[in-house]
Image (tube, rainbow, N blue to C red; front, side):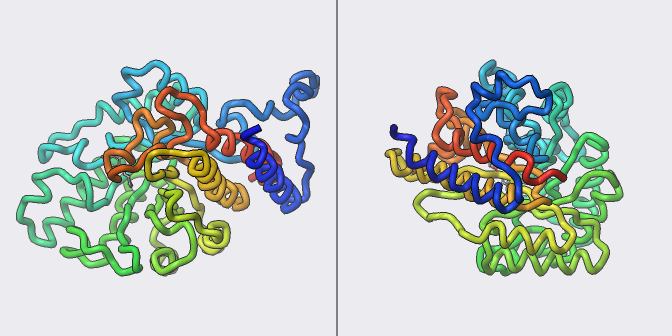
Length: 370
Ligand code: XIL
């Protein structure tokens, strides 16, 4: 009974999605009835794994992966393979981890994940080449001229993209280059090189792997606003200049205490109108602890806001959550007193948020064939 309001809401949303696309909402048929169907084209039951349902939408559904958990926790590993069709290394492709000592490149952990993905029919989002966080100490505490820094950045991008050439679907080439007010973030790269490092980074990445899709990725750019305006201006300019940028990643770190933007689809539409793909790259919906029923329902709503916008956007090519279980999720370690941000709890029980995602995917089936 507790689920009734959410179900009504989600069915209403499904009707909107179906009407928007002018198709029937097959998923209103009960799962039991579907199981008896002899039609090989028959849709999967609505309680199928997320990746099965997302495939019917022409969408990849992903998770950030904690590679230590993947190696040590059998339930975690099983769910990564079963539920998701794309994976993002949560940390192990970051500069700090791949080149802790200058010139000593360490790919082992990332290679294991890339191989896992290949074995499970998953695509990989590479994350991330240019960022201001999780940089090696030799870089942040060294003294370099701007020309040297530019060469160091070029070397890093070429080394990493070349190592994974042909195995990465989307690269987050540049991560979080703007402040929330839309001004440039004053990073090590911006200070030394000005905004031109961004075009350079995309060109170098493209040179190293011409087939990878290259993304600009940021948070607080899901809806319209100063920061997403700045990203829009950036990618507009890059496209005009012929810089090889393919997409914009909307991270999607939400909190139930803030509410959710109502214009995510509108924002996605302006990016795709430039000829770009978009992706939701790091969705999670945290709360101030302890949880209660309204927060739990609001969390489900937060995921739906992002996913429904993506489902309504033909060129939204993937929807990735930033960790699928509270057992290993990053929020409690970063935002004091907050947590419960993932689709599954710490015992791997799916929450209402999981069911909201599952139902949104199921009910959108067939409405956005690419
Ligand atoms: C986070 C990881 O989840 C943590 O484990 C790590 O300690 C810090 O980084 N935006 C991003 C991600 O682009 O790389 C960040 O990941 C979360 C915010």
